Length: 183
Length: 153
Image (cartoon, rainbow over all chains, first blue to last red; front, side, top):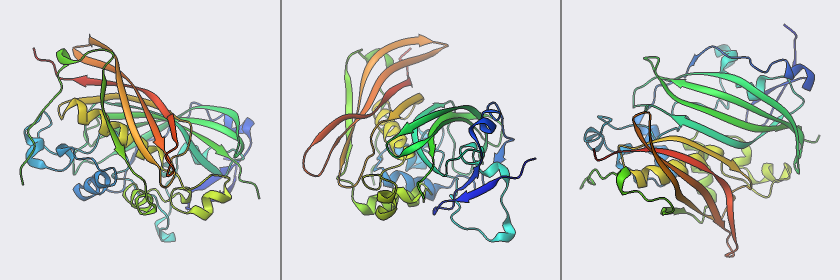
């Protein structure tokens, strides 16, 4: 495997640096499922819906949830951040699993910054407090692109979100603009 | 504490062409941006660090894609009721949402069909924003959605 240079932005995201030609050869790659570090937590759900001022009782009350087809409180639909940790810092001894770094960053390209542009999600089953989440992703497309903030590439990655029973709960497609910040 | 009653929108009661009740949030303070960064575990600095965002040639810190998604699901699920499923949501973000703006999320019903044993409703969805001086920009984020509703049968 070729060793690549990496660059880290001030949020801690690590970008693998390479060429467009090399990156095109990555299209179609699929990662193994990775279990998120933490199960979905009630407090994280409430923290999340507080931020968007969502009064939906399905996210606030177990008692309410029991009166619905879901049988209890659920996580807001399609909200996949509830068990994810954006790792600003971790002790070195913990290391980093390759699968924890998205194809948006680990595909070798010149860009060292990201900006989301398009999002698509399909929801089939809800996640509940206590559920574990397993995610794998597939690199769908890379296309050269230029915006006012710079030149780079649109990268489209599909993600598959399964629970501990292996049921597909959500599937999403995220397109980001990965570009090079001027030195 | 009084729990709200379980109230769903039924497929049979939905009419194509009707706009569903909109939701608004804002004006968005810097505190709200930091709160969202925290609740989303999204510490990409362009979402909370003004100096960083401007160095990137961006007008200001801006809300992330997940925040936009979560407002769309709030709009759809608030209207459709607790037994619904927002089966598909798709959108493009054409302009950043920055501090002191007020966001209104809207949706209009464009179709309905019974398919695969499910009562499906199609909608166009979009965001309008108003800046701190009252200037409005429409459809800065726009897309479509499919929601699974309850049927009466």
